[in-house]
Structure formats: structure tokens, C-alpha cells
Image (cartoon, rainbow, N blue to C red):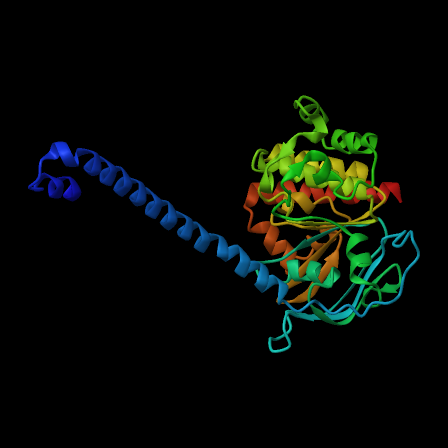
Length: 340
């Protein structure tokens, strides 16, 4: 507007300067647009440099020490026995121990529920199993000290279904089998086990149908079932469930529990759960308190002691729920006795 007004005060005739005025106006508007484009590009560059800084930060991280040199047999672990022997864990040398001399033995094929109040050390126990932090003492899997096993071999030998399902931007095939280790038939069988086969089959591209980052185009329950299908494909002797059903509806929770009982019948299963209903039919319950393993037995036997922590946890759910939980534990115990 200022440029237009300035041209209006030119003393000479507009007829002789009309072309020049038009040219000046178009050039002024063009250079203004170029300045705006340049500022937008500069702002975009500033935003994208955050990604570069993040990459540099990750590149500068110190790699975790891997002192494991022993290569166990190819089929290790073939039984699934887990033994914690006076195991203590701390996240950094300056901080106190989070787990303190934890000792217990999980026999092959046992289904163990891990419970405790917030901060008791349930998730830390799993981090110790995967050697995600410094530990003292020992953890033995099929009589092999996990400290002596290379990290890649150890972690690939244990399946885990986390609380927040991890899915990548790609296809269903890539999310189930990122390293192309299995045939399509195995993938379809795994999806059938978790009742996702019909859903994936109806998609336009089937196994090649894209999955958005984080599984944004799937429901929470479907994401968790995809992770379960991935664990079925791996067919490891040890499965860890870190509160995997805390964010799903009861129907999906029941499906996951049913699939685990059927597919992982011959596997050792460790289940961390806030919902006591999820672990009441376990072979044993491990109760954690202040970083220590304080109770470890069948849920029915633990409920016989009114002074036990597990008994108090069950009673806190309410009278009706507590009676239902106690009934589940009692029936499971009787079934085990009859089977033995």
C-alpha cells in the first residue's frame, strides 16, 4: 500500500511511467514472496536440526558393556528353568540397590505371577533378567549364568510382551517377522492363534498392508495381539508379560490368557500384573516388597495366611472380588492336586 501511494505522488505523467510503475509493483511483490519463502525455509531448517542433534546425542552414547563370551547350545534354553541366586540390582553405581539379594527358583513350564505394590521392584526384576542394568549375584537359565552369555543371544532367547506394544512403521509382515526368518504359512498360523487372521485377510494387501508408526491404525487390543503373535513365532521357552493386559478390555485380556495357556503350555511364563484376576490361576505367585522377594508359593496356599502381603492385596479388591479370586485359586489348586 505504501508503494502504491508513493507512486501516486510522482510529478510526471502516469502515461509515461505507467510501465515502470507496473514493473516495480510486480517485482516488489515477487521479492516479498521470496523473503517469506526464505523465512519459512529457515524455520523448517531450525526444526529439522533437532533431529540431527538427537542423532548426534544417540551416537555419542556409551555402548553397554557385554562381557559374555560363552555360546550356549543352539536350543538353549530348552527347559526354561530360571534361578535367582542372591541377585541385587542397581541402575547406577551412585544409587542404592533397587533389588536386594532376591532368591527363588522357577521350575520349567511353571506359570508365575509377579505382584506387589507400586515400587516393589516387579519391573526391575524383568530388567535384571534381560541384563538392562548392573546386577550382583547371579541369574541362571537352565543352569547357565546369564552374565556369561552375549547380550544379543540372551535377549533373543526370551520373548517379552510389554505394557506398551511396540510396532514399527511398515507392513504387518515386517512387524511380525522383521528379519524374514519365517514363511507366510507360519505368519498366518500365528495370526490365527490370536484371532487376527480374518482381520488381516480382509485387508486389501493382506500381510503387506501398512501399519502406521506405533500402530496408530490399530486398536490397543490389536496391537497387543500382534505382539503376542510375534512371540508365538519366536517360540522361545521363556515368555515375559510386563503388565501386557493392563490397557486392554476384559475380552481381549481373556483371549490373551487363553492363547498363552494353549500355545505356551510347555513354556515358562512370567506375568507382571496389577489385575490379580490375571494371575490367580498361576502355578505360583511371587510377591515383591521393597525390592525383596517376600512370598513365593501357590496363590491358594498364600491365601491361607491372613498375615501375608498377598492376602492383604486380595482383600483390598473388595469383599465380592476377593471371594471370586479366592475361589479361582482354590479350584486351580485342586486341579493341580488331581493332575499330580
